[in-house]
Length: 193
Image (cartoon, rainbow, N blue to C red; front, side, top):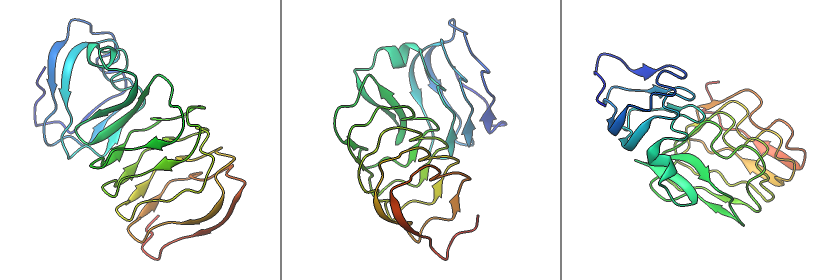
């Protein structure tokens, strides 16, 4: 499936259930957004996500042939961490080179420890770690530019002092809502919103 350069995003559920779509999905370099459930239940066997993409909605590639063939662990493609397949035991180490963590990637109780972020990470999507069970201090990388809506909401056991790096320009609403054991948060002067 090849899509034209004349569009820059795909809407929610656009190809949901199109099991006849198979082969490799090549997204144009002009794309910036893939919305929730865009390709659920498609027969896609391989995919390419260009660096221009800044947002990947929840379950965008769920139950595709590509996703079903992956082993348990972190679901990762072209510098994008889409989430997990199966359970994560212990700490979560996001691979170096990752630039984006998709919306809802690790929502729900799935982490039994702390998260190690790579120095390449620029975007943490909305609700990426919502109620995920992070239970240690949170160290954000100096490459980070954006923290999405409710990204860490209801991680009751994140503790200590949190320093948001100077590289961060945007923090979404409710990003740290319900993180009761954070002692303090230091925000950078570079914040735009």
